[in-house]
Length: 326
Length: 167
Ligand code: SF4
Ligand code: SF4
Ligand code: FES
Image (cartoon, rainbow over all chains, first blue to last red; front, side, top):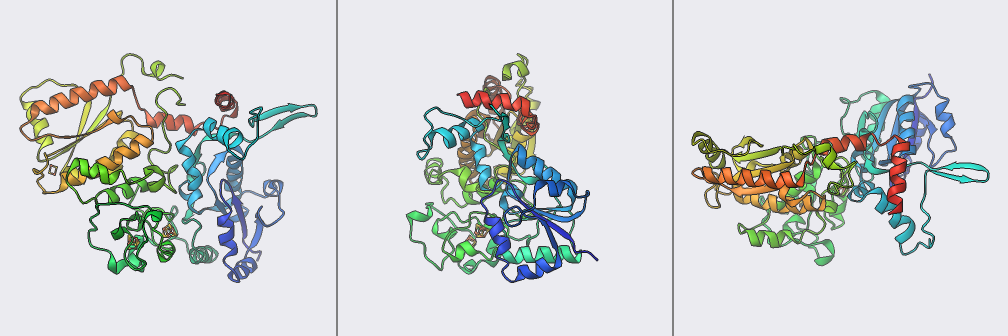
C-alpha cells in the first residue's frame, strides 16, 4: 500500500511553524517513514505545478500555516483544499489570524506606505509603490494583490482541524499526526488541544487567589516579577484564565505572562472580548474615576487582547469612519 | 462608495438595549404602561443583571447589524446582586478603550444607570442615543464584512490599491 501523501504550506507567517515541524527531532523520522511528503516549499523542491498535476483529494492531509492576506496565498490554499482530503490550520496565524492579523488595525495604503516609503531603513525617494501590474519593454510583470484585510484560514477555505499555538507545541503536533495516520480523528472542526484553560496546569496555579483584586496593572518591563507567584496576582496581564492549555505554560515558566497564543476554549466566540472581560473584572474599585485610572494602564488593548486573533474576532478589523469603507 | 448613498435620508438607527431585569427593564415597562412616547429604535434584551453582560454580546450585536448598543443597570449600590453593576462598569470602561482603538465611535456604546422608577430616564436616554447614532450614520459591520469578503476581484480592488497608494 502506498504511503499517505502530506503537504506543508506557509502563507503570511514567520517561519516558526516550519521550525516546529523540524523540532519533532528524531520523531520526524518516524513521520517521514510513514508518509510521503509531496509539497513543502521551505524544505523540498516541489513546485506549484507539481501540486496542480495531482488528482483531486490525492493528498491525505495538508498542513497550512500563516494567515491569508494576498491573492497568491488565496489561490494556493484553494488549490491545496482541492487536492487534500484533510486541511489542518497549523498555528495561531492560520487558526485565528495571528500576529500578521494585527495589520487589521491599519489599511493596505498605510501598510504599503510604511513598508515601502516611510520605514527608516528604506530609501525610496521616488516613492515607488508595488503595483499589481508593471509594463516593461519585455512585457507585463505582475505581483499578487495585497489584501486590505488579513484573514484566518477558515475565512478563506473549509478547514477540518486546527492545531493552535505560536508555534503549536511539538507534543500536540505529534499527537495530531498520530491520530491522522491511525484515522482516529475527532469531529470535524475540532481544535486539537485540551479544552481547558491554561491556569489548570500552570506551575503557579496554587498561588493564584480565587479572585485576584488589582489596583494596578504592569507591563513586563515595569516590574521584577516574583518567579513563584501567579503573574496575574502580581498585576501582570497573564491571559492564562482564558487561554486553552496544551503548551505546558512555557511562557509562565520563563516568568512571562501568557499572551494567549493557544486561543480560546471552545465555549468562547471572541477571545479578546473574553480576555478583556476577565481582566476588567479583577479591577479592585467601585469608583468610576479610579476604575478609569487603573484601566488606563492597560496599554494597547487591541494588541494585548487580540494579539493572535484579530481577524477571527467579531469586529475582524478596525473601521475608519464612514468615508474609507468598502 | 459613500455611506450617504447607501443610507439615504431615511436611516433608522438600530439600537440593541441590554437592560437588567430588576431596574432598567422595569423602568422601560413603566415607561410603556405610562404611555410615554419615545423613539422606537431600541430593541430591548432583558438580562438578569448588568453584571451578566459579556462584552462578547456587545460586539456580537454590532457585528450582526446594530448601529449602537445601550446597557442599562441599577444605580451604584442598588444592584440586586450587590456587585454586578460595578463589574459591568469595569468591563464597560475597558471595552470603551478597545472600541475606540477599533475605530467605533464613542457614542455608539453607552452605559446608563436607570432605576425601576425612572421611566422618564428610559425615554430621555433612548431618544438622545437614537439622535446621536442617527447623526453618526449606520455602522453596518456585516455589510462591510461582505465587501471585504469579496475583495478577491483583483480588478476592482486593484484600482482601490492604486488610489490608496497615491495618498
Ligand atoms: S494567571 Fe497566569 S500565572 Fe496565574 S495561574 Fe493562570 S496561567 Fe499561571
Ligand atoms: S503560555 Fe500562553 S502565550 Fe505562552 S505558549 Fe502558552 S498559550 Fe502561548
Ligand atoms: S440587578 Fe440591576 S444591575 Fe445588577
